[in-house]
Length: 255
Ligand SMILES: Nc1ncnc2c1ncn2[C@@H]1O[C@H](COP(=O)(O)OP(=O)(O)OP(=O)(O)O)[C@@H](O)[C@H]1O
Image (tube, rainbow, N blue to C red):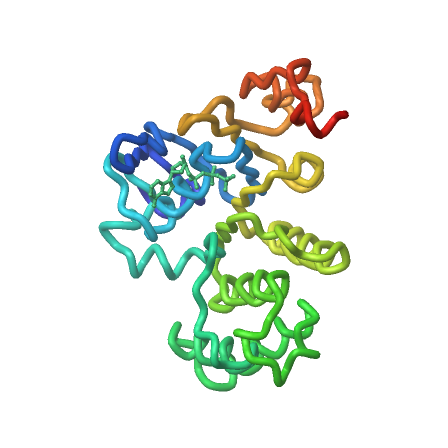
């Protein structure tokens, strides 16, 4: 496949088993370049496992993942240059300040000193982390870690961002900042794939969506096609087969 016409991200029959548990069962998805793609699914559906395989962090048992036509396992360096990743539970060097971390990672990714410093400063300011200039990453709150993780994903100027729950634990003002940043990234021709449990957010931000359930793709495509005239939440509940009438708390808590 030629990279100038390729999907931003293509998953082709990805599968992963952990012992007897089939976490991901032949997932195939195509993310068009320039799209804002949401991945939703119940807890344990296989979203994180799929995204980890998609960006080369976890080796699949079956299938392939390609970033702009570049196979993430055949050409990991080529693929990594094109994608920025916010993984679940990102491990960061903790004994650095946010600025030191971004500058260091920028240099590791081949940016010259001046560019690394300028991008670090700009990202810290946009994400409102510049106040934490003298704070070590180990002392960051969960939301601040999410924001610095997002900054590390963007630092090398990739054309695709793959973000596992980027809004989790982020305060509403920061969430607005991140949304605006991602929207302008897409408006400028970038592509975003993100997972989220917040249907309203996916509905507002994304133009494409995939519903993952029990390791499989239950539905995927343009948002309006997947919603099929309903809210995403209603469609989601319908697709994953939740019995809303049967939902109740423990009997001892009701009395
Ligand atoms: N390293 C692992 N070892 C064993 N089982 C795993 C491992 N990672 C994931 N699983 C299992 O694979 C399944 C899919 O997990 P995954 O984390 O991909 O789901 P998810 O859709 O991201 O869930 P959530 O929305 O709760 O984050 C789950 O049943 C999980 O317990």
